[in-house]
Length: 178
Image (cartoon, rainbow, N blue to C red; front, side, top):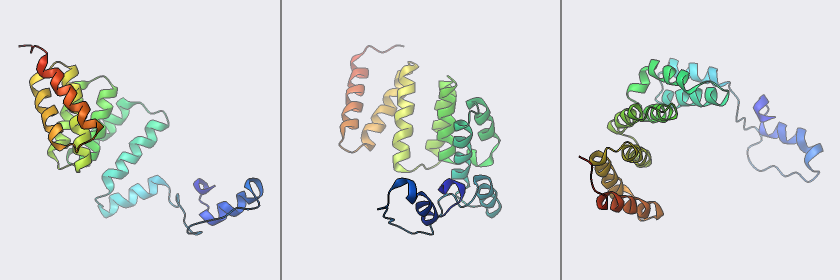
């Protein structure tokens, strides 16, 4: 019911008859999670030139993908947006879509651009992991080795760090292609 524009309190009250007579509502009863249509919100962010517009573009892409739009169409959409050139968020998504379209070289290129545009620390780790994995699959061992080493330096002690160490050792033991 909240998706239909009802407040949290209205939705809880309307559902009370079918859920339970002991319904307890915790939180702001006037909270409206879907108060504005995504297109309206996106237009407002564009008009105000908000730094959140990149996240709005990402939401547009994700909503369209969920409704069955092809990855190729969404790549076209992202390439048309000026924000894609400088947004690590949109460049990461562009790389993910290129990978989905089985274009790993273009995915790596998009991730490299995202890494050059000051991503967040967590995003940097995600980008390096995806990049290193694809470079390894493509057989580009020298850049892959550099990417795995950089990733190892960034990761805190964790199971993921152990996995990266193991991957790095495998690559160093394996004879290199020239």
